[in-house]
Length: 222
Length: 79
Length: 257
Image 1 (cartoon, rainbow over the protein chains, first blue to last red):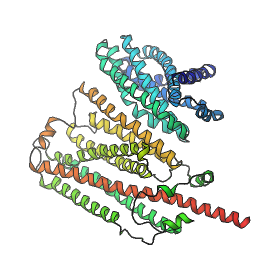
Image 2 (image 1 turned 60 degrees about the vertical axis):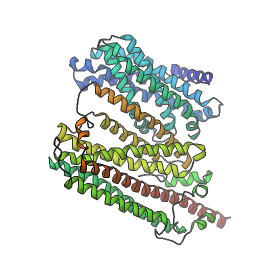
Image 3 (image 1 turned 120 degrees about the vertical axis):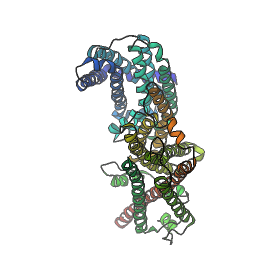
């Protein structure tokens, strides 16, 4: 299963490297979101800086939607989805592969967003270890849920509106915990972020497990 | 203060009542339509329809398109 | 068509046992709700802290209870549908029916909570753990119902919806505990506070609340039963429509052939 996962992940990432849609579209989208938040909440840094963590993670959540939709859009060309089904690859492996590819892209995105948040909102980056840990655990959870709902929505005509509606409420705990963890880190008290990191880890493990099991039946139904 | 209490009761009872009433009306309409199809009504509500009802196949694809509307209403469980 | 003939019945009235039971249930529920309203509005005394606002607390907690009960029922039905040994169409319809009734009750939980909160806290909303979880539950419900509406073959749609239901179901406790912890870091108004609990200790208030829980649960069951029947009728209508059309097509082909 893991070998299949590596195969699928490699394929997805190679497509991304060649097409650079993530770089050209999802990245700028995330920057645009940061800018729009800045415009909405005013130029006053005393408002923006404390809100940095929350705004960062909302931007990540929205970007996840795009990354997941892109992940499935590449399958819809040339009946690639059927090819995937018939390929004999372990469905759990396919899930892990696609989710890993999405997670990898998100992590790169988050690095960029971190810089953006420091520049635009004046966030003082401290507690780097917690920041990174939260990103790692949070991203795994987001990628897992996104990939799972992505396959549910992918065959359907209303997928563009259905995916956000399904995805966003379920990942609310990730938003909450990750923001809290980041807040503790940015406030100089990274020690207090422990519990929130646990929530993120539990969430990620749980949904990776569910995804691995549920992906097969969902892929068949498409 | 009391205004809020009355408002609360009215909202809850009114909504539940309307929903229940709407359900009954829709059920009656659906029953009438099912009778109109010439197959009559089925007394009793056992779950035994499973074996008889769904025989989807290639012929159904074209027919299903006819039943679809632009708002993507579902195959029967739309509220 | 032989299937249609097999299903043809002469009875057109609700004289069967299930119909009678349903009517009885409805009547009982109605009496229960009426009694709750009468007791809640007129018989029980005002609370020493909240005054008359306590009367809303005979309604709001039952709404919340049913909202979560309906969600649990929909998730259980989904699980039973997915489990190969218990797979049956009625579980999918039950899940859908429970979800639709549940979303109504969830909305009412939020509404009644807001209406109670406005005079109590001075604001229409507070990030109370239970209310916030209910609000997210509301959106989860709506997503599930939206997914159910997407057309497709029955079993495909059912399986897809069932898995989505379980994904969301697992999330609800995580949401609740996260929000609760999130909120415990800030002192602020909650629905479940010690004052509220003290209120129900004595006499008529406790009984009225209990009656409220029971009555609205019966209402939920009655609504769900009717919604289930409606779903079954609609599914049959759709299939019969197909059969009629198929018969017409074949007749055409036969005439031409």
